Image (cartoon, rainbow over all chains, first blue to last red; front, side, top):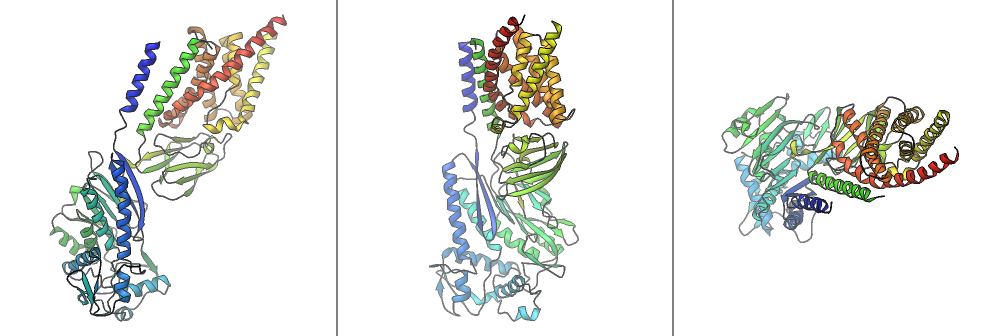
Length: 330
Length: 122
Length: 170
């Protein structure tokens, strides 16, 4: 009996010890850019993960302040300052991070043939006013007269200096989220945390899988948000959706989206949503915004000519379109 | 109590503790979904990964069963039954825990989403 | 002789039902872990197994569940089978333990308390077709130790008093 007791105790110790060194997931929630952001990191180095998650908070906060259109922060030349305080032709030095961000966005203006335009702030403000005060829908004339939307009036000079040639107003909208998510993912990879999942609502970025599988990511149905209409599987990839997002308002039965076509100054009506899959979350975000502004068939053609980019469209009549190589993620 | 009784107690104790530890190992920190069954039929899925309290009314055999959820946890807060066992049980949070409301034929279990989605793009 | 036994058993049956009813009004025990009961009625069953016979105890146990069903929970619903199966499991294992092991009355009581839980869980698994509840079992096992000991010690005391009483009344 005595021996049996020791045997049981011994087995018991083996059972309990064999399982302490498993991979743990540490998760943290953030609220920035008007979105709940959930990040999960899978690692057995809890200390490193906790540090990384705390640093993430700082990164979000800094970028949030730099790109805030509505609030000024002391000691920061942010978007609010550039839009509201900066006089025409007055030069200021801005934070390197904001400079690089603006540079990326301006570069994409040309790539997207002017469809993704961050100088559209004046028009956005009119829409926001109508939406917030329930005034219905503005007219084209009103939108047109709201001010310049010419991005060429923003000059990014050397040494992180910048000046305006006209009273343009910058709006980074939701496209900044993809950019910051990408930065954070890259930061995790740099410090050796390769297994992560960043879920920022319309932007999801994943690293290596926590097991030996692929991440499974559902794409929400824009018509019925409690359901998903497609499943994407992949590692080291970002998925960004435009369209199905809740940020629209309804007037006389028609939904008005927050993404505005810089040519018509109205929200487009080509599709209910589009999702882009690409390694770089920042690029995927810009591209999904652009694809939302062009007809589906043009978008399919465009994506099929790009490398390592796939997309899926939820059409206006509820049909679903895929880019050529989409099946690799199924 | 004789010597055999003591042995029995020790044996049960070790068995129980080992089983508890083994089940703890199966528990994971993955996002969770609560599944609610009525007469073995899945009637509701509740996403528990959302950091928000919610209340649901489920039709049970004896009438309405009030279910409350918060992040990674779910409980029955009110129900009509003779012993109210399932509302006394309180919060459950692990994938091996279940709430069984026999009189109302309701079963609530928690499943980690591991086999479903890691995330949903909106 | 036969009449005396019938009267005694009837009184014990009534006692076991009253104990069950009283116990269901004590909220403390059940609120630690739902489903955990002290099971004082089991003391009566043990008494009958030891003083009379397995057959009498089995009969008493089933009648108890039936009557409790009528009084409290209703007949032939899930709860009824839940209680019935617990009671049957418990009485059969207690008899086996008494007959074939060297356990004392306390040990037998622990076995009874433990198998009562097992029997109930088996019914839940069958009715709800769900194996998950089995993870609940270790907690019930753990709790069957103190409840089994308390009930067993009670049964032991009562049994010695009862034996004296019966001998006196001859």
